[in-house]
Image (tube, rainbow, N blue to C red):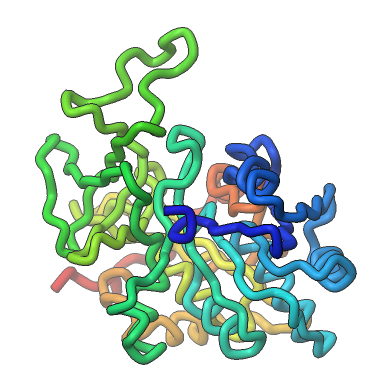
Length: 340
């Protein structure tokens, strides 16, 4: 099953832009040397210029990082009209990958983007968006439905969905549930039994992610349980809104958080860091979402910031972002749309 996961070979030059403490750089620290591949270590710099320099000088063929790193590299490549001809594939994980990023690397640089999901407790790969021959036979635009998902598990790993009452949810591609995982490489307990029994009665581990699973077995993260926005008793996926919003040509980074609402409990707020030199226009970014999300998902406000904080692994640090915006209050909520 190696080729359905990372599939390294002695011909590969791998650049893992993933901290070693992060599940051994997603397992590349072992998979690379085990296959005889060359590893290129980036050090502390993860800006677009530094990553491009390593790719160019070392002839990197495969790399792995979180979406924000690739957005920085993409911006650098475009700004300086550069190419990366040696790179054939990139693995992106840590948070959901925007469709705009997948298309940009494919269309402009002929680079295949593989999306993955995992965690320390899955040791570390849980799924990878390797398309089946059936799906690869579809036109590229139709493949995108599966390329934007986190993918299918490797041999021996099982996934299922549960609601908060513990009932199993259908794998129909649209029903949300808490993502549960089971397999020989999945953690069975924490050190010194901290937290007690972490598995359910069937041996499944609760990942803390909210997801869907479709009829082909492709899993898609819709949010972390702690980040999902609960509005009027329904869930709104912050990730789905973010991945559309960041596709706007003026946006460098985008995040969506929940803000307290007197009637609906929470409502989404779109937080945007613009590209240098761009001007603020809230309505422009709301209009960009129209027709792409349900009306009742539409953010109640847009907040422009100079910086969106990133954590040690390069992911958006929503905990810190919420702390920075703790004094924020929604504008008049009279126009919040009812769910239909």
